Length: 152
Image 1 (spheres, helix red, strand yellow):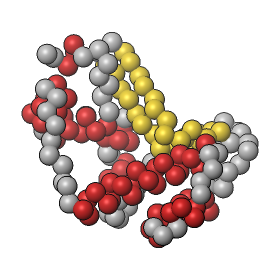
Image 2 (cartoon, helix red, strand yellow; image 1 turned 45 degrees about the vertical axis):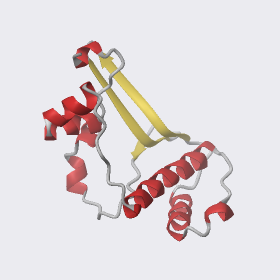
Image 3 (cartoon, helix red, strand yellow; image 1 turned 90 degrees about the vertical axis):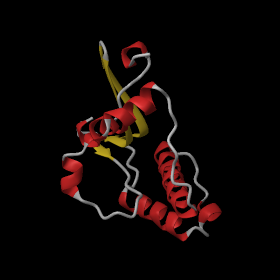
């Protein structure tokens, strides 16, 4: 089967990065549907869980779904990250918030998908786009300016 035969395949920044870095891995993963072994260490899983938990809390916050901070207060890192989010992003009723927003573009065979952590549309029409970085690596602006994620 060829990729063009997969009607519902959308290129994401992850799939495009995989292709640029290793076309063979792209073929195995996205065309042949071969699942790759992931790092299964406890530390790696904790990092993944933290990122997923933070994204879910941020989504609830911006959608106005109650978040019971006491329920995760024992997780100091997650609690502090959430409290910092609330402090930095005070909700404004004049803004529109779109957390965990998916945008798709299709033009024949070329189909792109961007998954955006947060879009804020302000009253004056200004649009702000945010991507949460929950890994321990230091922020490198130059890296993100030229990344596939930014391009998509």
